[in-house]
Image (tube, rainbow, N blue to C red):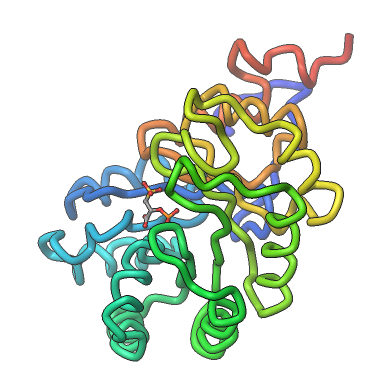
Length: 253
Ligand SMILES: O=C(O)[C@H](CS(=O)(=O)O)OP(=O)(O)O
C-alpha cells in the first residue's frame, strides 16, 4: 500500500484462491494490456477474454503472452467454448487453448442447452488439461431457475472437478442472479450460500451496487467477476472501506 492507514481489512494475497477479482477484457489492444497490467495487475487475479472477441482480436498471441508475462491467468469466455461445442469442435478448442498456453477454461451453457450430465462430462474431460471454471445460469432473461436447481447444478459441477462455479449475470448484470433491472435476486443468492461455500463461487457483478451487495453480504474477500478494466481500482478501494459506500464497514466505532 502507498501509505499507512489503520483499520484496513486484510486482503488475501496473490496468487489468490479467494478474494478474486475476475476482469472481462472485451478487446484491449496489446499496448492497453501493458497499461492495464501496470495500473491494475496487483488487483487483477484472472482475466476473461470476453465471448468470441479472441477470434477477431488482432495480435492475439502477443496479447495473451503479454498477460502471461504478468502471471495473470486468463481464459476464453464461455461463449467461445459453446461456439466450439455447437460445431462439434471440442478437440479443436482444447488444441487452441494448448497452442496459446492457456491454463484455464470456462465451461458454460448460457447460450445453448446441454444435458447436464454431458456438461459435467466436459468439465471432467477438461480438468485433465486445465483449471476449469464452470458457469451456472442462462443468458436468456426468460429462463428462471429455482434456487434448488442452481444449488444442484453448482454442486454437481464442483463434484465434476470445476475449481469454481461462476454465477451468470452477463456483462450488463441483468440476467441470472439479477433481475432485468440489475437488482440482486437476494433469496436466490442467500439460498445458494446455505449449500455452496462462498469461496467456490465467483459472482458476476459488473455494477457497483451489485459488488457492494456481495461485499456486505459475504466480506471484502468475496470473489467477483465481469469487472471492467477501469473498475478494478475502484472495486479494490471499495473492498477495503475506502469508498463512501463501504466507508463505515471496517471502522471501530
Ligand atoms: O465471455 C463470455 O462468453 C460471456 C460474455 S457475457 O457475460 O455474456 O457478456 O460471459 P460468460 O459468463 O463467460 O459466458
